[in-house]
Length: 181
Image (cartoon, rainbow, N blue to C red; front, side, top):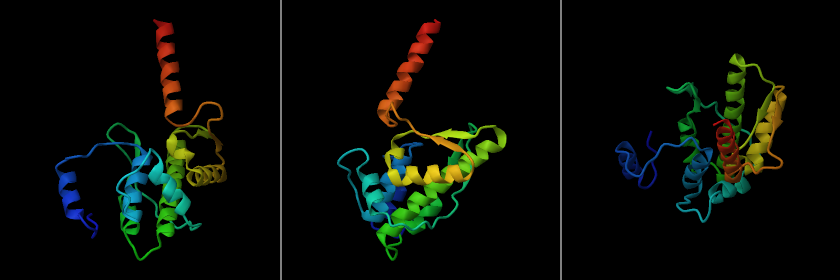
């Protein structure tokens, strides 16, 4: 897949050669890429800048496509966001609708991952964490979808859900390992 946008050929060649690329599981990087495709935003002033713009720009549309979800080589469920690309680069669609499309596709994928996990593991509650859930639109939609699927949903109330929460979890893990040795 190569979009018909400026510098797409160069970007594709760099990606093929793995120059200036990295592997990440961060949804935040999907928001960064989408902000570039939808808004032409090439630089962000701070972490979360691009996702905040997309969130504020989003219309109330709830159109989406089901993104492929597969187990990777380690058995982790991974979402493939490539099918969203044609819509994200389609400038005949208003930017607010494309931003809403992104949010809804990601929320629906989160639901489908939880449902797929529930097929093999018994649970009735899901905890949401990570900086991406500072995005109110995404968080509210994921919570709503999970609740409609009879899953209780929890979000951090005391410990922040972004990097500070991650650091707190690492501290707890380190302390637990230290206490055992």
